[in-house]
Amino acid sequence: MLLNKSDSYKIKEALLHAIYIGNTQIAQFILLHPQYNANFSVNNLNEGVPRFDSFWETQSTVDAQFSSDITPIMLASHYNRAEIVQMLLDRGDHIEKPHDFYCGCLECINRFEFDSLRNAQSRLNAYKGLASEVYISLASIDPILTSFVLRHEMIFLADKEKYFKVYIFF
Image (cartoon, rainbow, N blue to C red; front, side, top):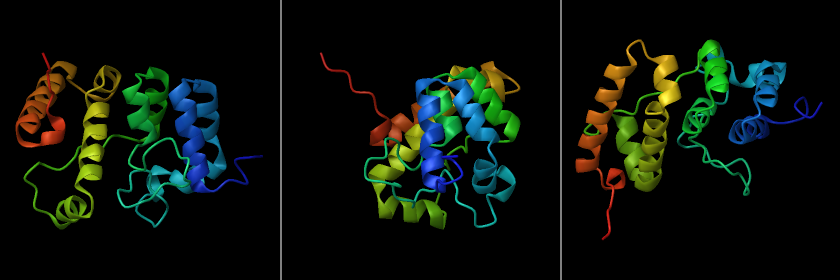
């Protein structure tokens, strides 16, 4: 009943909370609910329906716990929620790989100029999800090769992008 009366941002937040606490049953219930499917169906993403991964989207409420760039599959991957990742993959969800560091497309230029910190956070969240052992094992044909390729990309990014650096203090 609550889902029927909720807007898409509250449904997204409810799903993300279910994933965060690891409640597979609630996550599955939300994913199967018609209100969720009407708003976030993979088939409807290009038809003006709200998207989970909108960079430009602001928080639904002031007290939103998750940033707007976090998708359910990213969060499930961050916390290695294998059952939820599998449910989302079965629905056709996936984590979009960020554009190349030197990408000069209009979207990348606008993202960087609009908010470079938010752009870096979005990239970090995506790579954290892509590098998850659960996501690699469930979404990749060759998990070993995928791990080495991602490691190579992240080493390159750590050299180029200051937000990817690991600082060690002695």
